Length: 245
Ligand SMILES: Nc1ncnc2c1ncn2[C@@H]1O[C@H](COP(=O)(O)OP(=O)(O)OP(=O)(O)O)[C@@H](O)[C@H]1O
Image (cartoon, rainbow, N blue to C red; front, side):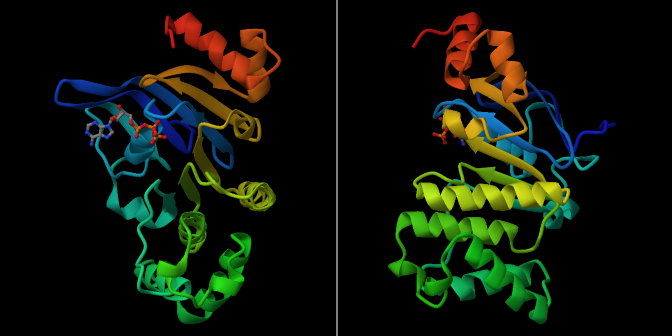
């Protein structure tokens, strides 16, 4: 059984053949929290997120989301997932992509128009709504992917490096929207390799080489490491784990 956490990982391992990419992961994400998964490229953040979103199955251990054991197809409607690679149709406009996705989630017509206006504003693409995606930059596509992940107002939002390459001003707006959603009770799991972004999370776990180094609020983590910054705390826990560069 799951406990009171919205997302719970117990002793999770993921392997491909003999290659183990996640080892003994324990993670507890409370409801209505913005929870960060922080670590360098290749440490296993996307893999952890794929297990939580129900795209992959764990080799060992348990993954629970919203009190249900994952993977669970019924939960898909409650989850908004933004992957690292964009799943968009290049020959359709932004609006058409959003409508297609919204229909898959059963959003009815009137609500759809309203939601499209709202989400497109969050990612600052209002002026580009009717342009074909083939004319979008990589960053614009990332922003549209974020808009798609929040379109159906999911109660659980899983965002894999959502703000990479995004203008600092827009990034601030996106964070404001994430805070607003969390205040309304949405649980948000966000991966990042940017140390200062981790500070914006209510709680976080640090990852390195497929393992968790430390978990807690940014303040607790810094205090435990005896450092002033998250970056120094990350170095401290990495050395404690026995990792060189
Ligand atoms: N399908 C797969 N088969 C085998 N190995 C994989 C597969 N997917 C990921 N890996 C390996 O798992 C490890 C973790 O990758 P993952 O993408 O989860 O890391 P990450 O922290 O999200 O990095 P990045 O931010 O660069 O995407 C890497 O060594 C990667 O090569």
